[in-house]
Amino acid sequence: MAYSQPFPLAQQAQNKNTQQTFAPDLAVRLICPECRDPNPNIVEEFGSGDLVCGNCGLVLGDRIVDTRSEWRTFANDEGDDPSRVGAASDPLMEGIEQLDTVISFQDGGSGIARELQRAASRSQSSRSERNLLTAFRDISTWCDQFSLPKTIADIAKQLYKRSDEEKLLRGKPLEAIIAACIFIACRQAHVPRTFREICNLTHVTKKALGQCYKALEQAFNLTPGASATHASQAPSTGPETLVVRYCNHLDLPANVQSICADIIIAAREHGIADGRSPVSIAGGAIYFTCHLLGKKKSLKDIGDVAGVSEGTIKLVYRLYYADKEKLVKKEWIESGKAVVANLPPPIESAMPSR
Image 1: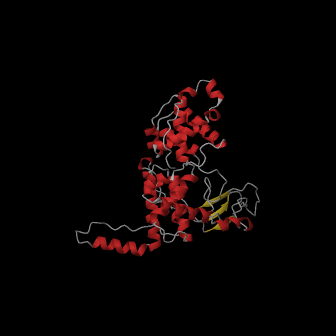
Image 2: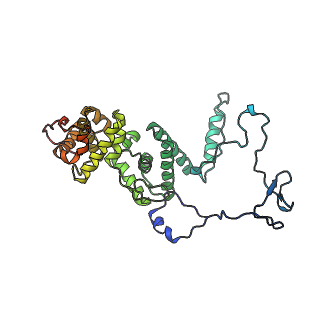
Image 3: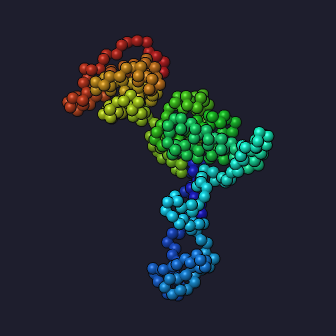
């Protein structure tokens, strides 16, 4: 049987339609050849290891493996049934030995335990496996520091393993590869993070992160919102996606988020502030919406959350203010939600660089 491979290469994805895939036939039923009952009563007798028909007693099979627990629990107050021991197998560690030998540190101060641990670590796993385990630990640690869910960490680990198998980023620093995998995983899980946030988290330069991201995007034909098995034509990450997180950090109500997203979409349709980064547009749109709805926030607070300067926010606000009639809907004004007079006129100053 052939199952879909996570993160297939771009060339493999193009030839996928020409390959024949196989799957198990779930419609097969075991019927007794003697009584031919369409609803068979097949009994598994683990004591004798036989598979017996419950209607006529015909033995249909022998040497049946007992799949029940190795021992029984005689009291309910003894805790969970110890039917199996050890942790569940990790699909990300497929092909790697997942059973470890732990050597005690108590050696009476002779130092033998440390030498035994080094010898055991060298003999149990190869260098590539140790590098893979190290990368998995770093991904989990950075995702925990960034308060990212376990789903994103698993996607990032899956992507890193595929890139390691294909030898796509040979010679690149490990931190840059991990940062690119986390960035892509966030976009696919619809919780995007900006390049600046990932760089601040992992202490990787923007240039190194961009190089690794471009290599992975071209190799696996990745698009924002695509899953690990197939690509989807989802729109790229826009400022309206960042607005929700920024408004939550600023303790703004939900109506501010929805109106701010509508203003950003309307500005994009009219070509207002085109060419600006999504972070700058999000910060300027929040500042515009807060004054429009009377929920004033200072430029410093918005700039600290969005990670942009006050001058950049003022520039986007100036562009929105010049075409405010196209951005503010009439029903907002008629219902009393928005008051255009609350918008302060922009102060003319030197235009900052993007």
